[in-house]
Image (cartoon, rainbow, N blue to C red; front, top):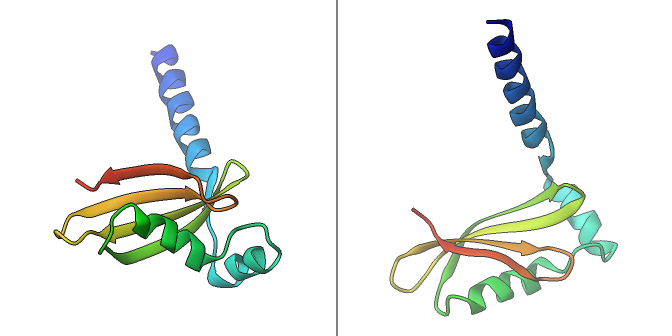
Length: 102
């Protein structure tokens, strides 16, 4: 029984540690990072995402820091009405994820 409790506690700590590794950045911090050249301009990042789905529209964006890396997340609705989740490395614009939202 003690082993089971220890296993559950360890699993809970692992989940909490994973959640703590990602942090949402507010608009002020995001603009400071852009102005410092740490992340690309949001116009350029948006253009990169929209190039994947011509005629699409951005519905939501978010900048996060995950494990010391800046990730720009977007939700894009394409011309056919399909929603896509896109993640870009905000420092270089590399596409990390481009998948249809369920």
